[in-house]
Each structure stands twice: as C-alpha cells, then as structure tokens.
Length: 155
Image (cartoon, rainbow, N blue to C red; front, side, top):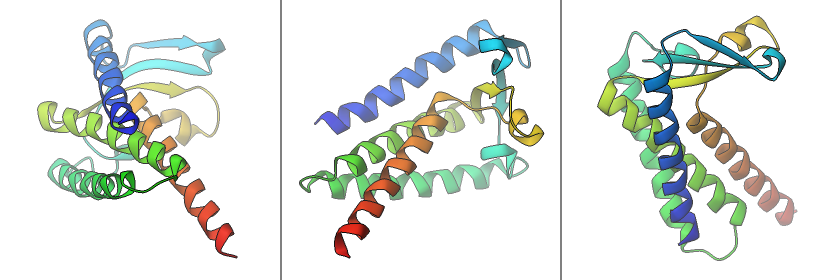
C-alpha cells in the first residue's frame, strides 16, 4: 500500500507545483536561485526530453502511453513479490512522474517544465525539467540498482 501511496504523492505534488508555476510565472521568465546554479523558468514542452520529436506531439503521446503502461505492468507484477524495495520504490516514482507528465500531455497538449541549471555544457543548460522528470530519473536509477544487485547475487 505504501508504494501505491508513493505514486499518488509523486503525481499530486507535481500537479500542484505545475499549477502554481503555470499561474505565477510567465513563459521564459527566469528566476535564478543558488547563485544562478538553479534557474526557475516556465517552459511548455510538446516533445520528449530535450524537445525530441516536438514536431510530432501525437507520436510523443503514444510513446509516452506505451512506456507508462509497461512501467505500470511491471509495478503491478512486482508489488506482489517480497523484497525488491528499491525496484518497488523506483517503479512508484516512475509511474507517478510518468502519470503527471502524461496528464499534462493529454489535458494541455504539452508538459509544463520549470527547472533549469546554470552550470555544465551549454546543451545541458538549455534543458528545462520538472519534478516529474526527476521522479522518472530517480525511478530508473533505483530500478537499475535493483537489477544490478540481483545480477551480483547470481554470481
């Protein structure tokens, strides 16, 4: 039950942050934080990460739905097993973050992004993220750790 609650928490936290950012920030308005290392700026992303396929929003939506259904199926299957806390937590984050971004895609036609970084390569500094993206990244990392751990136990 805790893992299902984590899905809901990830979704609703991001829902309210995106709603707030959409109401109080204008597009491309920038607010530097942490000495300019973190930048708040609202951006509407019709594509996938880094605006990949932004000219094909229907394909991005379809791919997103397929990926999320795969993650949801894995989540439902692993919930029934004992242990695998890292994978269960990772899939909770992955599904919650994925649902949040899919909700944006289906209701608005784009994803609201609002966090950018003022360090690193120029290409990285141009990317704009949201909390759901960080949940997805963390979920993938946790699932990878679980897979790596299982492989090490087999040796």
